[in-house]
Length: 112
Image (cartoon, rainbow, N blue to C red; front, top):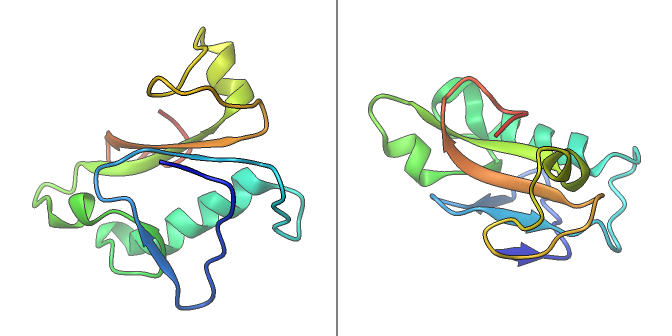
């Protein structure tokens, strides 16, 4: 999934289920200048201590796994490129984009 705008209000939720996402940096102002930070907060809010019952950027797939061993990880496009990558799921991305991946490893939010 590639999106240019993400606007989650206090009760809003976007469910990635087991999908990945590229959130374009274009036209987005999170108020504090850090899109990566804002997306991390949205994942943390939805994660709700591992129950995945909160509002924000969530994953039904992670919630339904009885082992609670999957999560949503995030990384900037520039960091992902520094690991030797040039595409994310076959799609191009910009250095300032935020890449979100559904992944195994329930304790790691800011990683792939």
